Image (cartoon, rainbow, N blue to C red):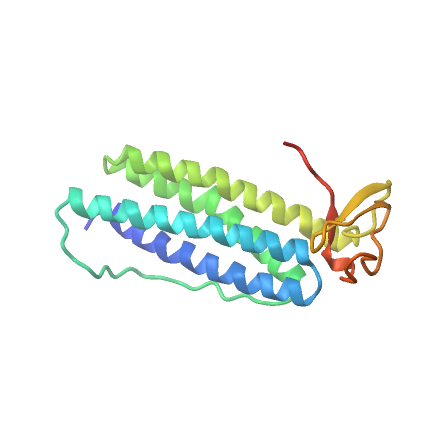
Length: 194
């Protein structure tokens, strides 16, 4: 059996796990009042769902090209199960994203090209770009948590309550939103470029 078929199966499973893991990480972040981080975990979970869909679609295309009729493909698989507080989860997510784009997916793309599937290699390399972005966001959020600067800025900025849209200018957002009474965790830096 071609290695690319096994790789597509493996990465369909891996990305499916990532989606669920990030959804669970979002729940932890929300319980810790890191609403922005929870939302980023959820958004990334949706990205991972799309990656999983791409791998599954490529898997179907490869089965058709190679006349493979098996409905079950066995692959050795692992489950990443590290789970903790938001700091731990961000650091873990950063490390996994880094490994995906720096080691695993480039090798996967190389094998696809070697086995004469350049269209799959191209798609895999585009997924690498997304994984780099995921790591960048997780890293920025992790550093802000580590430095305790999520809600403590050196300069005056505009904050927006993600629950009701109330805006506030200051180095820190209010402890409670004066509009809807949601706590500080619902505030993010207002960033609007259209």
